[in-house]
Structure formats: structure tokens, C-alpha cells
Length: 429
Image (cartoon, rainbow, N blue to C red; front, side, top):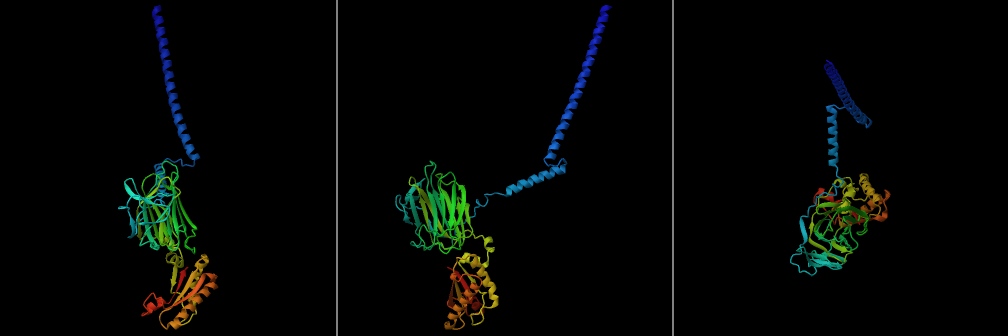
């Protein structure tokens, strides 16, 4: 009996222990769940508070998410639309339509001076590099010029392209030359360029410079204008690279391996001849091949020109301004009042460009004799000069010249033709 009672008590104690253990387990589980829920709530609350403090909306609706997504897309699109190198990388080069000089060096004898070229100074000879014949500028001051039409110096004109391939190897990093393509007026010599493209073959990346005479300069060698493209290419790596130049009336564009790196909108016209120069390196030659010079150029971008006055545009493109809107009384040198509007346009240009000089030409039709028309045209030109002086223009910059009827631009047999011939021309000098 005693044993039975002891066993029962033990069983009861065990059951009580198990019950208390179960209750504790349940309480622990409930506390864990509560703690997890509290932790999640705290996390979401903290996140929402962070967004509020950051200035963000605490709304989580689908519409707000969609709006954010759209905004992000707009930002990405805006970033994609902007490329700071887009202008420098533009590839719009087109060779001129009429080739006037071409030299691929085929048929030349290695070691001889290239037969289609002349020497300005230094030295050059035909060489073979990477299995191709080319010109090697072997002197530290090598300067050559193409022989075009027997060596004349006025073959370029105001619309032309120049192309050539060039190779130089500076991978040892032990010194490199400077290279130039120089464009000169027919009456100027080397070192007095109308404009020059210059690049040094040193450094890891090359910078291209263009120094040019501005349209307002009197001569052809005072290069006030400068355009620089910093570290835009690698052309000293011992590989062939293609270079191209376009000049169209006033616009200079230069390309390396098809990408435009120089874009000058307004330079002085008057190109006559060109040279290639390599200087400052005696250890290794600069190699040149496939030279092509052609009439024609990359199409002129006119937006800038339309913003100019008619006088400025005409002078920039042709070097003169021709007008039929300066009128005189019949048979006299007396200006009609309506002429002053046109004269004011010329005065505005002259005051904006105070160093530019003009020949002011008076032209008549052929009605009447030369004995009458010649002095009349001179008097009319003088009347225009006097009117410009009265508007504040420097008389030193103007010279009146009467041309009479000797230089017609239209048929004097018709009234329309005679009206065109009665004109005043401002020729930039």
C-alpha cells in the first residue's frame, strides 16, 4: 500500500512538472511572437520615419510607386540624351568632289625624295613601313609641300579638303615630335600661316590645336584665334591613323580617325597652299602616306551665319558686300534719304570691326558716255564715304573708287539688268 501511494505521488508530481513546463513553453512562444511582431513594426516605423526625414513621401500606393518609376525613367532618359563628348565625336567628314592632288607613293623608289613633293626645309625620303611605301620625315625639322599644277601657290581656294595617313611610334616614351599641317595664303611663306593644325606626339593622349587668322585681321599671318581639343586621341602608338581637314569659306574642321576634334566657325579666307611639318625628333621618323587634296568641303553650317548681319555674312563668305539699295538722284551724286538705312548697316559693321579697311566702289549702268559715268561713279563713292564718316566711321579705313560702267554684272540691254549694274560695292582690303 505504501509503495502504491509513493508511486502515485511521484506520478502526480511528474504531471505537475510537465504541466508547468508546457505552460512555460507556451508563454515563451507567445512572447517570441510578440517580440517578432514588435520588431517588425519597429522596423517598418523606422523605415517610414527615415523616408519622412529624407523628404520622401510616406505613401506606398501603387500610383506613387508608378510615379517614382516614371520619374526614374525620365532621369535616365535625360542623362542618356546628354553626352559632353558628342560634339567632339561627330563624324560628318565628306571628301571634296574634285581631287586635285593625290599621292599613294606607289611606284616610288625607296631612299629617294618623293617625286610629287617639294622640300621647304629639313629632309624626307621614301621608306617602307609595315610593308607599305610612305614618306619618312627623317629630319628633326622636316617640312614638305605637295607639287600641285607645277608648284603654284594658289590652288586651294576657299572650299577644300585635305586627307592623309600618319604613323609615329612613341611606345618607348623617349621623346616625340610635334606635327603641323599648315595652310598659307599664296603671298605668304612658311612660318606665316593663315591657319595651322598642331599636335604633339608626346604624352599618353594627344591634344589638337588650331591657330587661325580671324576674319577681321588685315593680313594673313597674325593668328589671334585659337581652338584646342584636349587629350582627344592616342596617335603615337605605332599604328596608322587617318587625319582629315575641311575648310569651307570660313569654317575649319579637323578629324582624327573619322571623329571631329576641331570646329572653328569663323576664320579668314584666302587659302593658297599647304605644307606638312614634323619637328623636334631626330631618333625616329614620322611616316605619311595616302595624301589627297580635293575641291569641295563639309557642308557649311549656316545657323551662325543667319545670326550675323547681311553685311557681316557677305564679307565673311566673299570678302565684299554688294548692294543695290544705296540710291542716288538721277544723274547726280546726291544720296536719296532711303539710302541711309543700308549705309547704317555698313557703318555698324565698320564700327564693330574698326581695323578693317574697305575700297568703296561706285558702279553705273552704260546709259551715257564714260566721260560722264566715270566721274559720276567716283563722286557717288565719295558721297557714301562721307555719309559713313558722318555716322562715326574712320575715313582712314575707306577709299572711294569710281568704276563707271566698266564692270557690269548684268545685261545693260534691259532695265532689270541696268538696275543691277547701278550698285555700290564694299571690298575688304
